Image (tube, rainbow, N blue to C red; front, top):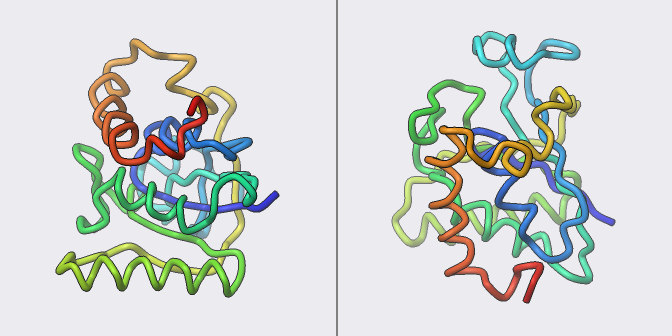
Amino acid sequence: MQQALFGGGCFWCVEAVFLQIRGVEKVTSGYAGGHTTQPTYEQVCQGDTQHAEVVLIDFDEQQVTYSQLLDVFFATHDPTTLNRQGNDIGTQYRSVIYYYNEEQKQAAEHTIQTLKDDDLDIVTELSPVPTFYPAEEYHQNYYAKNPSQGYCNFAIPPKLLKLYSKFQHLMKDQ
């Protein structure tokens, strides 16, 4: 098993996307990249801990590659908007890739450069993996547990639609 650590806005949305990908065994919502030890959701939402909402993805590289996960990551959030995803504004919603090794770093740099070559102004942060703090239990698998929650119903279906149309070959039920 390998791990990837991405932040692309609200972790409920990012988690819902990656749970659909074949080879993804587990997605854990949490916080990374800040200065507070054991941050809470309330602290992170205030924006003064400098943590990003992130997802820790455990995946089987025999079924899905890190580069394929990067493609899904970039296609299902806006990597050109600094500290914002839709109505979510603040450093906790920044676009960020935390890499575990040089191979992941190089794959991310290559993907970012490819997007920049397509004239996209990518603002995604690329940094070594910091300490990851799992979010509170009620945040885990949030969309599946709360399918009628208003924000989720607004933000997640368009991401899943994009995922299904662009990455059907990576979906679990294919």
